[in-house]
Image (cartoon, rainbow, N blue to C red; front, side, top):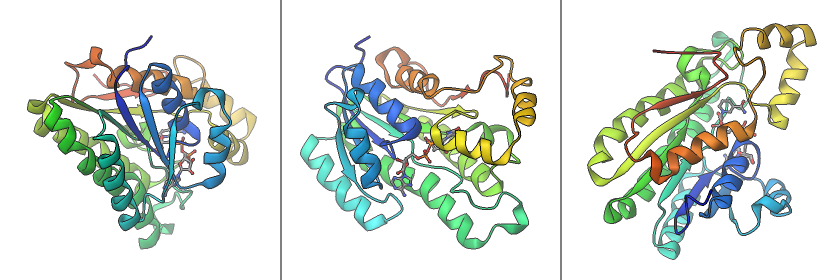
Length: 255
Ligand SMILES: NC(=O)c1ccc[n+]([C@@H]2O[C@H](COP(=O)([O-])OP(=O)(O)OC[C@H]3O[C@@H](n4cnc5c(N)ncnc54)[C@H](O)[C@@H]3O)[C@@H](O)[C@H]2O)c1
């Protein structure tokens, strides 16, 4: 499918993990993709992937406000603005999961990457989208933000809850400008990082017991998430906004 020819896309924290799969999928569908990522190593490795050919990479720590704003100013000027934004940056940053063990600094770090970075990127791309009367913003929520998680802890759950609620508000505010804002909420997706985390924290039996609670009887793949993001970023999803799309094999459901 070539649903995104002539579209420009900005994806945060996307040299590795789910973001990289999303970047490759949007590029495959014809978008001109710019990826932001903090890691030189991840960017160098991503550049070698055949599916990442033609993608532009910019190195930045998205929790550094000044560096991020300077880069965004330059990118918006150079490209004329982006049609699609995927706010993928986030994570629990492996801060302590028990609430009483998490410090103020743990909370600040998790909020900065999951919430404030998304605010900053969204603010930067909206003016050009409004001028064109077309835009797609897809935020990365989480099953944890929808249904809670003992695995990741309260700071991550609260941060994703904030991203998801912001999605609803921005959908209301910018719908009249032709801009849709949705969130994809994945369950556990077997990226190399999550795979090693699960292997470290859970026995084979415990993992099998969790899989038994998932109607589709498997963990997610990065391509499952990329497909959902690509749909929401396409023209076809023009009447879908303010939605939180669970991509969790049915592990969490809401009517
Ligand atoms: N993997 C999962 O199972 C899962 C499940 C639900 C939600 N999510 C969400 O999906 C998103 C991606 O998750 P992932 O597991 O692929 O992430 P990840 O931890 O594997 O990281 C992906 C990329 O983020 C970059 N990055 C980290 N901190 C950064 C910073 N400060 N500035 C710029 N880049 C930075 C890393 O260099 C890496 O290339 C996150 O928002 C996460 O919360 C993931």
